[in-house]
Image (cartoon, rainbow, N blue to C red):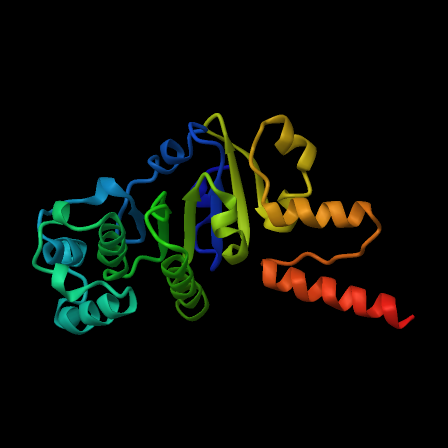
Length: 233
């Protein structure tokens, strides 16, 4: 199975694995084009921030008549500081650079988006805002979004499916709840398992019935409901 088998699924899909497992090499098999945008440091084509944001729209001659309006909308959505727009790409922060590269791809509106190791530079607040934007792109514009990372805990709350890469090949794939049932296999490969999954499994081993949840907040609410039921009987 190849990554293009997952295209046009209207999902957010995590591509995870250990550092050096071949995640980025796996992704590089799929050259960026008008239908699939890969966001990583390799897509830098210009020195100037604004030129980079506009680069792919102009390359693909995509809705140039709406360029200014769409560009301003995306800059606002990503909260890119207007002061950096005329600056050199190499003079801005890593966080701003990541947002600029995301903007340069979102502006030309590909069907599938691959974000390759671009979240490490963001603080938690910025990560959450960008993930909420990606959820909107999936929900309202039918995008399929792949997020490549070595840290599953960054993305677990927001993804639908997951692809686990080991030695450059797909080890497991599918719904995230189903994939992370394979704890023994993942442990044997020393592949990181989400902390929330590990915690839920510990509770279940103590006969505390906890449903699958996506976030710590949901987990707290679920535990509270279970404990309240226990003390009411």
